[in-house]
Image 1 (cartoon, rainbow, N blue to C red):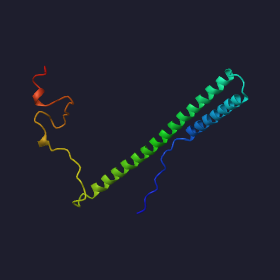
Image 2: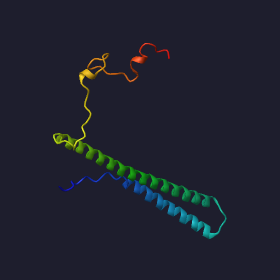
Image 3: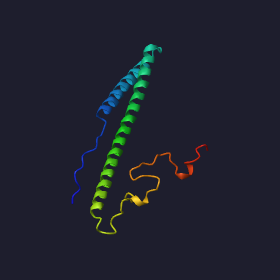
Image 4: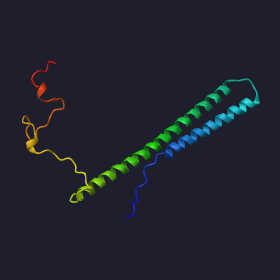
Length: 143
């Protein structure tokens, strides 16, 4: 039987890629502007400071957005693989339950205990509290 066509997992990045490219274009513009100001050889003024600050800031923003985009794509791929794995596990468990007549192929799932296996202090539908530690702590709670 052929492998069924699985849907392509969600790949975030179209909007993120736009902002990374936009930050790259702005950074390139600021770096070119700073280079032109530096080549002209005039005294350092406020314009030089603005160009340098813009170049550094937009470069850092581009790097951070690029790293975020890469992490999102990696997380989406891991999520898709996890979903695929869960579907495979559930399908195999479903198929194994159907083949339960054949011995040696199926690991039986744990079933609920019979009514005779219950402790005497609980009824058949009664839940056990999470903080109930059994008979040893029932009488004296001062410890």
